Image (tube, rainbow, N blue to C red; front, side, top):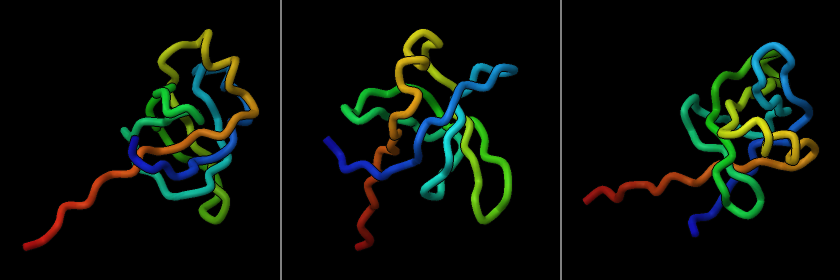
Length: 86
């Protein structure tokens, strides 16, 4: 398994969109996979918003049923492998 970096803590589920809302702990890119502590993919980074110095992240969950179980949990990003220059 590839090493993971912490995205942030799941605070709640957005009532209007159903997205998971996290307090950001690292820089992210839209489209990256969000993983739970066991490495299982729970969703995709959909948006980031809020103040620049303390942003929030919206994660579009794979399953709304499963997303309610991870409120209060930390989500992670799968580390991208860097290509070596020759």
